[in-house]
Figure 1: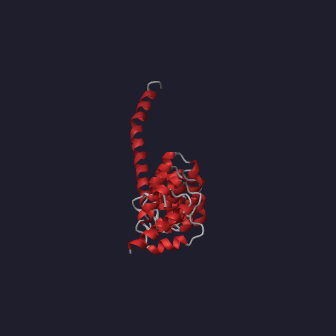
Figure 2: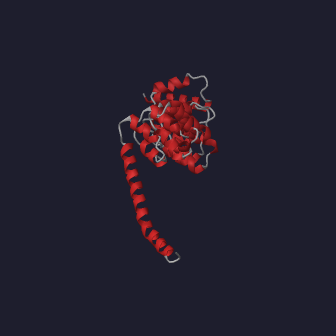
Figure 3: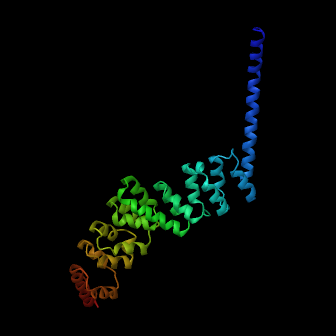
Length: 271
């Protein structure tokens, strides 16, 4: 007997690599089958697939790349606690255009800042979800480190860029003024805030793009904190009618009122 046992052991050892190879082949075949089923257009097949124990979070993320999934299927995926615990699954679900609204809104509250930014900029993101993303970003602006504020100033949405113009440090505010998403209407809403600091008004008044727009220049002239050394540049080239309309405002800063009167008198002399 002692002589037989080592032979059996050696035989088992010789067979082990084959067994491993066979198991690997089976796993590979199974992976190929799952990958093929993920592309199925049949909802019944997809529902059966997510119940398969071999279907893991990697497969889920692959499935979530499809934009034609139904809301019911996405809801089923969101109910699986094992998958919900995986951060990239939560991101993919929140970003999917067909994820039910309440589920997507709940998921959005669990995401990191830059993922919220990315989702807010997706053209397929529903408006209600986009508004929630903006609110979350705006509420976090004061607590964010400078590096993240600068990133948001470059890549943030219209409202986020305007929020950084109003409340960000000067460096972030200047970058936000160059943000391609910032609109004239949103900037005008920001300029209507009386608490806006003079440094921000000065940055807008000297900006190559915004300082050329009549409505922006008028808004700056109406603001009580616009630095006096920018008055000449803001008034230059404004239509006479705009100057007269400004003078009719009861709350126009006295320094601006006096300067506008001087400019109107000069224009009358030149006629």
